[in-house]
Each structure stands twice: as structure tokens, then as C-alpha cells.
Amino acid sequence: MQKKQHLTGAECKVILQFTRNYNLFSQEKKRYFSKENGRCITKLENMGFRVGQGLIERFTKDTARFKDELDIMKFICKDFWTTVFKKQIDNLRTNHQGIYVLQDNKFRLLTQMSAGKQYLEHAPKYLAFTCGLIRGALSNLGIKSIVTAEVSAMPACKFQVMIQKI
Image (cartoon, rainbow, N blue to C red):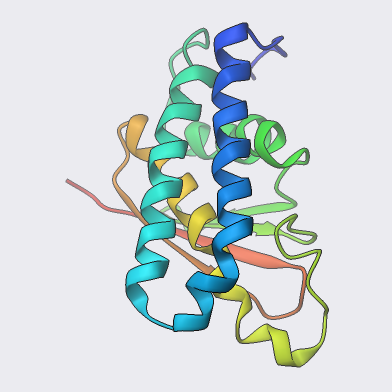
């Protein structure tokens, strides 16, 4: 297991950048989501990808090398998620064939939305940034992946990570 670390000034700057990007996301989400086109969702996912790459680079610079894919996913679910969202992933499942499901029962970006069914169909749009965040973090750790999100009951969500074998 990784030891608990204090953040350096550089790491604080990266988290500040994430916060700025998240605030931009929050301010622009009404404009993005009122258009209902994939181009805006792709833009959010790409923004998350770049932030994920930067964050994981800072968070892992002083950690020991990961043993395997599962070890990396555990790091994402515990250390990375805690630093970004102030809580760990509630559940990590795998089929040991390259598919991982990360479940967050109180996902921070959805807790502000009403639990009404009328918002359920719009919830996945709010997860594009986080899908990119996960994909970018994994990319910088040498894992090419496809990340999708699913919401069945607010504010819980599941992120499915499919590892792309090279």
C-alpha cells in the first residue's frame, strides 16, 4: 500500500488547476448541455483527460512502481479519488479480463442535482469530465482505456473502465 503523503507546492498548484477547470465546467455546463450535441461532451471529456494526466503525474512522482493493472486501479480508487473528490470509491469490481467497475454511491458532481427521475437522463452528461479524468490518469500510467459512466439512481454512479490491450 502507498504511504500517506503531504502535498507539495507543485501538487497544490495542480489541484488548484483542477479546481479552476471544475469551476469552468460548472459555469459552462448549462450552455454545453442545452445544445445536446456530442461535440460539447467530447470537449468536456478531453478537458478531463488533460487534467487527469497532470494530476496523476504529480501524485505518483514519489510512489513506488505499481505491480500490476489491479494495483493501479486500487490507487485510482483510493488515493487519486480521495485527493480529487475527498472520498474513496465505494466499490471496485473486476472480471480479471480488463474490465473494472468503479462505484461511487454519493458522487460529488451529482449530489447537487435533484434525485427526481426527470434529471436521471441528463446525469451522464455531467460525468464526461470525470470519465476523461480517469482515462487521462490511466493513460499517464501506461494504460490505454475506454471509460464510460452509468447512473441508475442519483447521486450514485458507476464508471466502467475497459482496458485496451496493445
